[in-house]
Image (cartoon, rainbow, N blue to C red; front, top):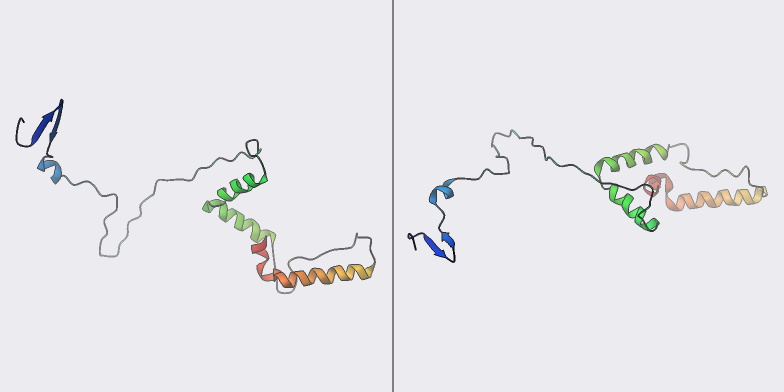
Length: 137
């Protein structure tokens, strides 16, 4: 041993850390917090990035494509865009239903058209489509 704080063996030296190095304090990654109520704004410095092959060359089936799209939809910007599209495509008012069925070009009797329209209205009421239509879209 060269001194009391070091051990030399096999060409390596093991010694105690200097007290001067221990006294050096590392800078905290957390901003200090004042008690006066003022806050600090810090930038996170990160971003989202993802690549999607729209052509679908590397995906084997529709399930994989759906899973890719759902993965992209978890990003806040994409989620906001999807919500805007849904809000613009499904509009509801108090006076009229959000969707309707038009059977003008269907070549069946009026009694069958009336039955289809009644069942369509029945399905809409069972689904409570006026209130839940945007969630179902």
